[in-house]
Length: 549
Ligand SMILES: Cc1cc2nc3c(=O)[nH]c(=O)nc-3n(C[C@H](O)[C@H](O)[C@H](O)COP(=O)(O)OP(=O)(O)OC[C@H]3O[C@@H](n4cnc5c(N)ncnc54)[C@H](O)[C@@H]3O)c2cc1C
Ligand SMILES: NC(=O)c1ccc[n+]([C@@H]2O[C@H](COP(=O)([O-])OP(=O)(O)OC[C@H]3O[C@@H](n4cnc5c(N)ncnc54)[C@H](O)[C@@H]3O)[C@@H](O)[C@H]2O)c1
Image (cartoon, rainbow, N blue to C red; front, side, top):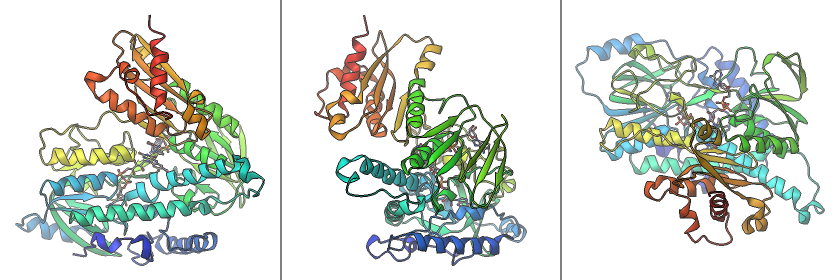
């Protein structure tokens, strides 16, 4: 078996010379588009070298999953026959397919429960899409843009330095460093727990046998008792768009954008679309944000959704609601989006951010009698078990909520159910953290939900502009809203808009989790550090209590 130990992929930050996430050397994908994909890749790598002033070798941000749009279908028969006729013991108690947050958490729990576990992932570095193309690069990028905005606003610097527009991928130097450090940290977790990691594409031969393509047309098989599918997701690419066109992007490809644009269309006003709207306006680009609904992020409390829409407009985002694509016209240096309403929008480029699909099509699920839905997702029960007894699934591949935070907990819980932990519970209450500029974060019910349920609630609010800490750090916008039962004072929902919202929310979440203490009074009777952003809880609680009679 070709087994790549986690240590092979280790990145020592200080002597980091081999950190590329790339299929460059392995060339292991047996795709008809292989040669074309390789030459495309060489082109992109050259571009990277030209644009970056980050002198260290850095992880290639090209998504290896671009190459998953291949199939790994042939050659099952020979191995299947051999293994099925063998009277063998399983090599592993459990196999984990995918080394993202869900896979990592599952593997850690299994190994700590005394199971012999192996993880399979096609990347030569652990961390999954979350680390390489999703959460981590987008959040690091956001931070760089946020710093840029503050720098431009600061009168100390504006006179001294002229601001020049920069292409997106040159703002990614910070992201590359964070990715490198994250890979390093996670690699050590695997090493310290002596978890074997095999680099390759996994697909099923039968319920207890996995085929792994470790190199181009090189296949190995392993046998296992149970499996957890944590293969994650990738951007959904509708057939009507040509993502090979240099002006057409999705959230993976956008990390390679190496030219400056004046105007960009973002199609899809979900979380990714809204986060990138902030990033692009921060870089000084004009944004047309196409939303197929009448409200931005309609599952949020409507006041918060209105607030972000208002701020987007201030920053130069044109929100076009209730619109749908008819077709896209592409030219060498611009695109024209034709909408079903008859509108035409011309722009330098388009970012398509309209949903994701589970990475299930190359898993040969037919061999085990499993079927994914039209979005490539697997159905699981409350114990994360699929319809096949010994096969579990967690993370983006099972759909809701498709967050790294939840994926990690789901992976851990799936493994806990698998090993029969009596206190295992499925993941339920997940906070929302949206890293727009400013941030949004929520937990619990919205005003609309409580009204629909006829719950007698009240609202307590604290505006950031009145808090001493917010004034000191220059936060002009932001609000913390606490929704509570007007008779019992139980906290029912917390909604925060403003920078640091994703941190601030966890104070409220902790209180809500303590059932016996979950009342507004906690915030009134607790002494907060002063000045802090956390003080917003005390201010909001007092504001809410004043409304109760
Ligand atoms: C732009 C962007 C920003 C995001 N921001 C946030 C955020 O701020 N907060 C948040 O909580 N979430 C965020 N997310 C969502 C988050 O990234 C995902 O929810 C998370 O990555 C899911 O983790 P996972 O373990 O299920 O899968 P992934 O991270 O997708 O990892 C799956 C792994 O499986 C591997 N794999 C695929 N096919 C196979 C196969 N056949 N065999 C073996 N291995 C395979 C892949 O190579 C990959 O390494 C963001 C996503 C995107 C795209
Ligand atoms: N801060 C964060 O937590 C964060 C940041 C970025 C992304 N994410 C996660 O990434 C995921 C993707 O976000 P998004 O903004 O691209 O889209 P989204 O999931 O918000 O969906 C946008 C639209 O696309 C549709 N859609 C989704 N998947 C589809 C598919 N396979 N085929 C056809 N239509 C589909 C949806 O119904 C919706 O109308 C979300 O689940 C989100 O949780 C989270």
